[in-house]
Image 1 (cartoon, rainbow, N blue to C red):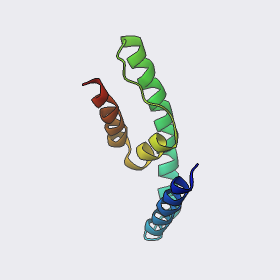
Image 2 (cartoon, one colour; image 1 turned 135 degrees about the vertical axis):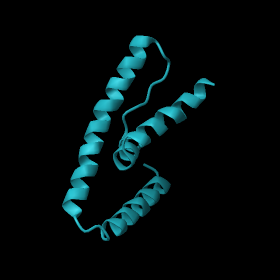
Image 3 (cartoon, rainbow, N blue to C red; image 1 turned 45 degrees about the vertical axis):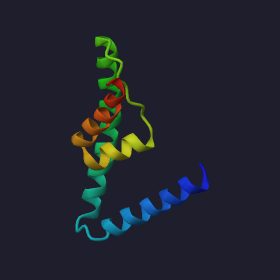
Length: 90
């Protein structure tokens, strides 16, 4: 990681912890985000497999950014990532 990426990661973690301080049920909130993150990994894998089977050249990599986006935003975040990825097909 470059120093710029580390800087932005520190800012993102700080903002996330600051926002988490306002949540009343911290354990429940963290558990939901963790569960959505794990389920998003499986969802990305299976959607990529379905697109590959149907021969649609649209795939999404499983990395930190995609998992965090879909863990925080849920299914709409996953659809957003596939939509952004699909824009390169236009």
